[in-house]
Image (cartoon, rainbow, N blue to C red; front, top):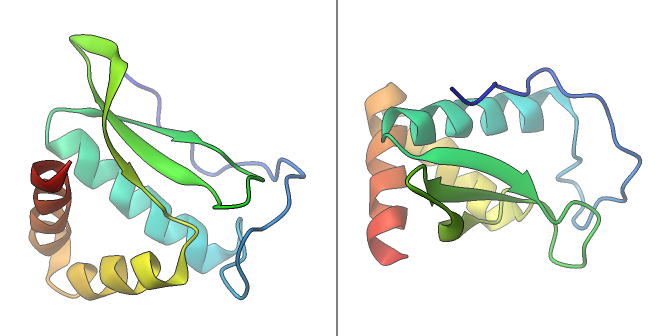
Amino acid sequence: MLTRPFPRTPDGAPDAWWPAVRFSAAYEERLAALWDAVVATGFEPGLALAGSEGGEVLFVRDPADAEAWLCLIAVEDPTVQDEIDAARCGGAEGLLSWVRARLADG
């Protein structure tokens, strides 16, 4: 079972976007909800690319093939954050549907 990494400790990596500040309460809450939605699909989430030019991503992989990433979600991108927030208005099921659509798109 994959351990849920929240709450996280700031890692010192720079933010790629502003005002989408990593480790802010809103950012971490959004990321935790997204993490839980990915787990609910039966896949494994992980975090990567913090401090990169494009920003932090949540990756999704199949536990049967940990080397293959199925999907990358640019969680630091404000546009993606808006999409996640809109999906969360539909509750856990709304966010789960959004994640499934992202997985279908690859």
